Image 1: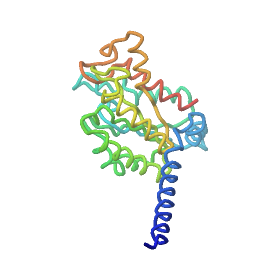
Image 2: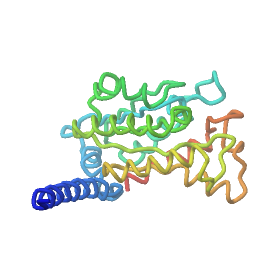
Image 3: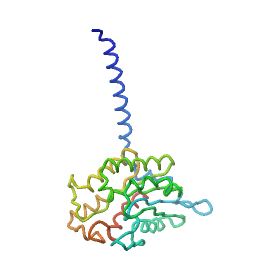
Image 4: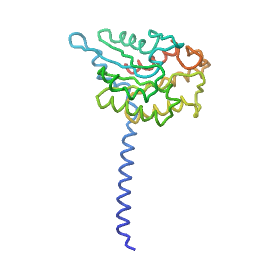
Amino acid sequence: MNRTPFLALFSFGFLLCGCNEQSMVSRTAQGIAEKKVYLNNVKNELFKKWPDNRAVNIVCHGHSVPAGYFATPVVDTFNSYPHLLHKALKEKYPNAVINVIVTAIGGENSMGGAKRFKADVLNHKPDLVLIDYALNDRSSGLKRSYKAWSEMIRMAKAEGVKVLLLTPTLDAKHVPGDDQGPLNQHAKQIRSLAAEYNVGLVDSLVIFDSAIEKGVKNTELLSNAWNHPNRRGHDIVVGEIIKWFP
């Protein structure tokens, strides 16, 4: 048997595998973006004064939580984190023109969000996009959610838009540290996506978990019996977002 062609083919295949593996490693080894520098271009615009400034557009894209739903059907816009973020940013950047635009839809999952991302989100020419779909993605599964989140991240990055990914807020059944818990599984995937695409991460669930571990009941952070945060819960989220504007 002539082993030369086999060895050559084996070596070529090995090289291909090595290249693919190296490419995968380089793609996944970027890590989560650094808080101190990731939004520098956005912060530079926020610091500018008239007549050198321009409007800075921040889009909150997701489901019922950023849409402002509390105890459905009540929509408490002014106690939801997009509005609280707007207020916090205005306190920090008093000379800035800031538009916090909410494109969230109650009941939507990330597949729906990805389908309308170009028309409803990128159409606003955002400087920054926040993506928050994990609560509703529980019924969609990790694989489909991963594809949809990845698609939205890629579309944003292709337009030079900065991205912050949000881990979920609570539901009534959530147990910190439960590897089989759907919120924990989706939070883990969102952290992985932030590292894979080198974008920002707002890890709200970690703070919710810390509160529960200190004795706070899930229901004390919810406005209904299932999964919408109350004002205290929204304060937790905005407290984590504003850390990206040191």
